[in-house]
Length: 576
Image 1 (cartoon, rainbow, N blue to C red):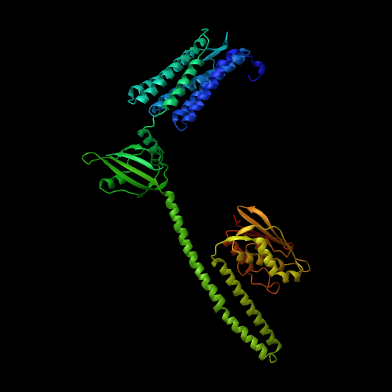
Image 2 (image 1 turned 60 degrees about the horizontal axis):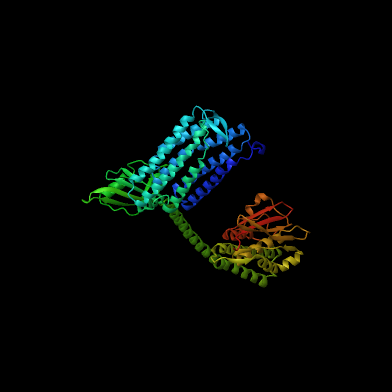
């Protein structure tokens, strides 16, 4: 079937080939003219079937032997089985009554599938092929007459649909459209001449000509009269059916008479769901944006905002109730989330106030006793220095060291609290300039240790410039402080691209490192992995770093191997 040697040129293939292409063009044109209507979609589907049917003739006529021709005949008749159903659905979509007669369309489709399966699996519909002067052609089997009856019964029902609409319509324009479509269907029915040859009559199948006539007349009608009437009633129906709000109309007894698609999906067809609302309406209460919690058809509880109106007769008696429901479930969730965030913000502001108070106390009240101790220890050293024993001088030095350490603790605590208390807006910050300034501040320490600090390209971030200085001051100072004895400190600072929407900066050193089981501990306030006699400091540096990074909506992570240095990765928001 798919080898070129199985085919020969036959001039009889040209008419169905040309008409098939024209049918496809007309079908696409009609669909594009009214893309949003059901009728245009069904028209496109019908023309597609007709096009495939005609093009399958090409395969039959070109076949070099009966075996190949038989395969193409099966394809051709399988397509033909669907044409009556497509024509019926098209006629019903033209008169907008498909919902009422959908059952007939399903019965027709069921029969079409039955005959299609018979074509594909048995010889009951197509028993073989016969050679005519124009080429090979199908011959019918035992089920052929039944298929013929089905074919014409469905096509007759299609024509009757148009005729009934013509008689029912009072609009001259609509009548003319039905007249033209009936003419198109009648002309198209002359394509039944193609059935003569399947019953053994040597009549050339020129059915492509009536089919072309059907399409030309339909195309003319679509262009001049459109597929459907755009009446106020039709427009209102479309608007109601596409509303995002649920619309329900109930009669005086509270029984559902109409629901749009949204309401049907939300409530289902069950009567009695709206009785509590109806009781309030009957008591004279007005419902405007009245919120109720309803379980939808799937059992999910939703918050709905109802507005209702009462339709009355000339004696002011209720005859119907119109309910419009708007789903405000998501809005309610958003409102609750907003309230929770507002309360959280208020708590944060209160905490910030406490931190500011603590910062003030730490920087003023708590420092005052230390200053006095420092003053009096200085007097002791200057006034009674010679009277002190060696043990007394040791105690004095230890006291001064403790005071100095306590003072540094308080300074670090103040810095730690101020990180969260700062409320300035973020701005674009060039980290390369920040690091240069930090290295200038650490110049003496870098020179003393003969450290090699290598800085590669760093990104532009959105943040607080002062806090960025604090961050890199602590990270670089730590890298220098925790160096290995008798080894030159080496520090690498570089940008590492974008990770999860944040830019990454790495700070790597060749220092003493640490055990990774302490990865979280090192970022906690006052946590130290070494004694004060080994390395100076309060244990607040990395805690301040983490607080700064968190305030910027970023992340900080450390990894290390004892004796092989440490790596700190800092993720910060980029400047857009």
